Image (cartoon, rainbow, N blue to C red; front, side, top):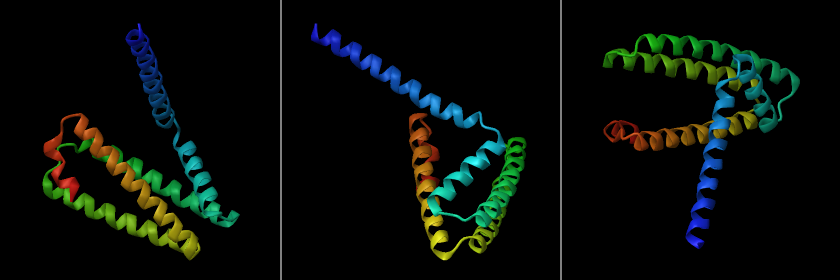
Length: 150
């Protein structure tokens, strides 16, 4: 009897956990670009204590970056079968754009705010990379993991 009860409790718990996880991800994917920008600006203003001028400048920068990212995303969908050289070139271009955006953000934020923003961004990037590695391992893509572990 105890085993049956324990099995039922575990089944209900797993089902609830799986539905909760899907709900969070689904909400993020259904946001419009403006909603995503608003969310990001709101989070940054809370984390970094931005003033009104900084908020408006950050909003403009994030909106511009978002538009560029969406265009790149569409372009990448078209070029799924890129050659290795094209990928290297695209990565170099992305690094240049990131450096440019960082320079603009550095002009907007105070040195303390920029340091805090950079730290938060690096933590999120590390978490994202870790989750990507976990998903690849779950999907059996172990052969593709070696370049990412470096």
